[in-house]
Image 1 (tube, one colour):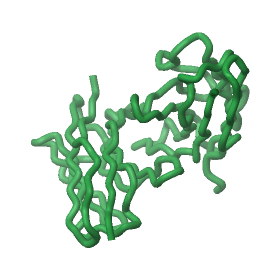
Image 2 (cartoon, each protein chain N blue to C red; image 1 turned 60 degrees about the vertical axis):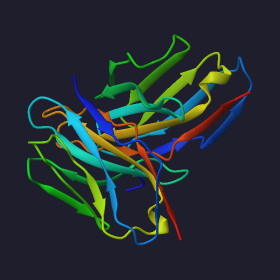
Image 3 (tube, rainbow over the protein chains, first blue to last red; image 1 turned 135 degrees about the horizontal axis):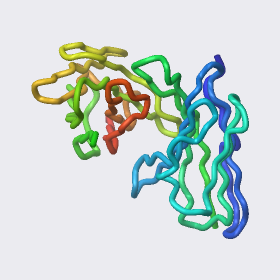
Length: 115
Length: 112
């Protein structure tokens, strides 16, 4: 299996621009998670989906952040407009919600730098 | 609610030293417990897991035992290598839930 795929791996953008991060979960996994990792705040859960439906987005920091999962093999995390404080590594992870103990499979991450 | 507490890092060791990274948790019932490892520039990956009390998870020379009485899941390795330098995350899934709770991570630095 190819594992969780994220793109781009690195993104550098200017403040105010729209940023779209992409994730392809492992085939057959029905739950998908978006995380943000920074030195100051550690690993934060932003939002998660089950069977393509958003279940909990309480971790999304602001309305500038939005996430979609139009089908079982693709999800996006969008930041519009971006700000320097959004600079972080963003991870996508997937699992099978009906198959305990529910270990998570992480992608390689997207390192976002907003200047 | 659920929580995971890990020892503060960084932990700095010489090669071949013994490693312990402490992890304690708060959760009702019988959660599943995990250690994930994050190598520089990579995502987290599962290192080992245990799903019930007294279970021992092991992988790549690392071990951790699920201690219900002390609500702990300490990570140990008898002889660390430079290649073990990474950040280690303790995590739990409360029984029946696929939503994980992660600790803040502990950085391990191993010198030659």
